[in-house]
Length: 317
Image (cartoon, rainbow, N blue to C red; front, side, top):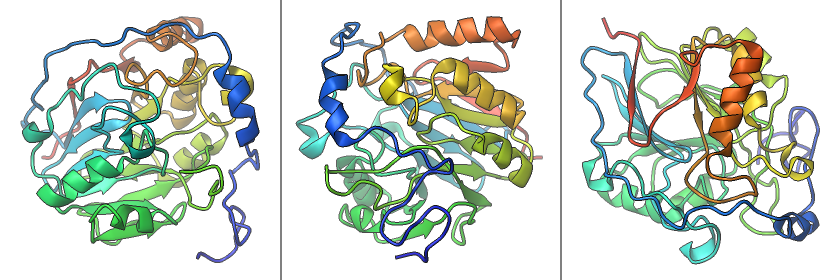
């Protein structure tokens, strides 16, 4: 276990703000709130990732929090989730309405996985097991997640604390704080750490924020780690606010995070894939449009990618 710190009391990890979120006993009340229905299935043709074509990185949205990030030095996946359900044994939990936008067999060789925390919609053991068999990638993850990752057959796992940088990555990668929590069961809450990642391949700086509520941490990331060319920020699973405010940003808060980071561009994620909370499938997109209009932020500065769409970032020359 790590030594005690401002975010670890010797048994459990805590958020930068000290907020703990709602207890597990509040979940039934949240589940009983009226939901906006989602479609049972959205069929869209799978896409193939774009080529680098001289870019420092190509970022492709596969769905939820899963991105393929291709660079000249390495290809990475963030929070890889290819299963049908986000829950125990892949038989419980929300069922995805969109298939992964890039088929597993169409992925390029994956040398690294960035795993932000242990929730089922971000840490899918079945997907990790398939990645282990096909690619045997290195996994970089916050403290406390290595046993779960190794149970999927992945041998090379590096755990980081907030603000620590990887010793094994092909380019600088730093674990950043997030306002969230961890749990796989009702009895293991906050026994493992959570976070995001700042990636700095030559010619680009990309923040994958993981799963997070809004907090002053985004200003601190900008102050400590410098400029951000592209921020990947969650915009979904935010209602009801009495439950979600301390663990998930809504689109207006994600826009504020974008402004705090002074990011050149931000892309929304964590929407349109799993019906996890009570808002409708398109509500995050409408709310992001409204937030941009209210703050006079151009769509080119904070947008979303289509499922399977790729974005070129920076130049490798």
